[in-house]
Image (cartoon, rainbow over all chains, first blue to last red; front, side):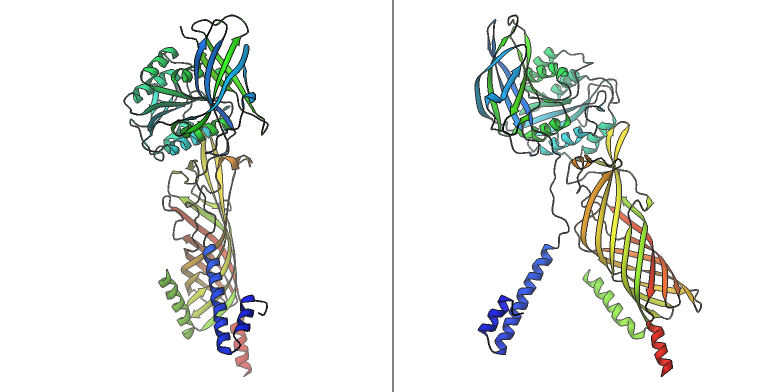
Amino acid sequence: MKSNPILSTAEKKYSDSTCYSIAISLRSSYLLCVLCGLFVVSCTLLPEDFRHFIKGSDTGITRRAALVSNTPSELIFETDLSFVLGHSSNLQIGYLNSSEFSFTATGTYSIVDFNDVELSPPARSSFVVLLDQSGSYETTDVNNFRCKSLDKFFHDVTPPSEFLLGAFAKDGLLPSGPVEFYTNHFSTDAEIQVPYLFSLAKRTSGESNLLDALNQSIDKLSSETGDRNIIALVHGPDQASVISSNLLILKAMSNQVKINIIMLGKEEDSMALAKVSAGTGGLFSLCPGTNEMITTFNHLYAMLNEVTHAYRVKVKFTPATGSITPGMETVHRLAVHDTLYNYDFSPMLVYTKILN
Amino acid sequence: MRIRLLIILFFILTVPVSAQHVNVGMTFQYLILKQVGVASDEIIPQGSFNYYKVNDNRWKFFSAGQSFVIGTIVQLDYKKVYFAIEPSYELNTYDYTVKYPISPTKDEKVSFKTLYFQLEAPVYMGYQFASSTIVRYSVFAGAEPVFPYHLQTSFNGADKDPSLYSRYGVYDMRNILYNNDRLYWNSLLGIGFHFASLGKVDVRYKHRLSSPGVEYKATFNTIGIALTYFLPLNLLRKKIYYEE
């Protein structure tokens, strides 16, 4: 007891028994407070958690691609590129420099301009979100991360923005019609459609009719106000559509619909998809694996609806052989190496088309 | 809650006045037949972006969890009726398996486990019948306040795949199979076989009275065996009486 500083002080100050009793009662009160505090702290068995999303890997996304000018021997194009972290839903990578960017194709590239830009969000967006149900995800998404990723995106959407979920495949387990929409109207309630979303994992088969599905989705969006977006998660090229990509792009442009494509699969299957997204002003994310897809969806709503960082890169391309002719289409492959963390981002594709 | 505790306390304090015997002893229980049931076809956890199909709500031996109980017992006999309280420590596990949809032909089974360290004080009343000089049988029923003070959660899959922890959330069953409550109640039913005043063996059934979650109602039922050994206090008292 003598070692207790409170009691020792009390003993010195109050020599008579009454004062000593007061000191004892003060000490008891002190102990009682400590015990009460411990009780309050111990009232929680487990720490409070929050809704968390699985980790992905750091990913680069082509936000926009456009031709600036061209001559018969060279062309200049401009692209906006964003890089996002796999382990966080907030942070974007803003420390890269132009020497870490390298384009590859049959020709030579030189970066003529390299800037940081902030892309401003629209006030309101409407999203049609399409899930490719064709074939099988046995090799590309063996653990069904796609449903979780889409679910995360839907939960990120906040009013007045709204969304509509649809799935597409031809001659598969979905009913006839290019797209099976969950409902007929746009919504902001992410919870209600969760069982439908995850049930789609049990209904994959058939062929991809992506372009027809996009065509029907443009019709759905045509009556919506605000920014109009289609987000398509696909894992292969179109196989069975009636409409051509050129017609579809024209229709999307005339209806002011951006087609954003997240491609979970191989680079060689992505050329036509990059064309559709670039042609409509949408973003394109090439995801060789599920980790990139997870990261893309983790940041997707922020990229489409919040102020986000991007690198605006202007590039001069000189083809190795031949000349640049009207109507020529080129897909430029971009590799980015993060020297700070010695990390290679997954390849990005930038599509350009020479005007007729 | 407070009123219930007061009633039980009053009941315990007033009974010894007219009790014929006061038996004090130790009890060991092993409860291995369990059922965990969620009243839904699916579970959408609030802590992640997962989705589970409810797979199996059946009774199971061992695989739905186990409970080990060690405790003391105070039993008051009055004619054919007895009252008992068993302040005990319980190590209580539950195991609940759900399915995550992967493909048209494949689901992944995920088993969520909860481990409770808890204190409890079952209070029950029994009625003895078919008694002879040596053996008696009884039925008993009561209530059991349970005070969990430590909770651990984990999960695993059928193939023990380590990547499972990156895909599912350890807290996915929070407020479904468990919560942060420091007290919950069980009801208790049992059949006992008493051997003189030395001990008893009983088979008991416990049913959790409240669901940990509101959105998804979960039920917990447990059946097991209890072995109770009474200290020979009554025999000792009789011996002293005869010596006098």
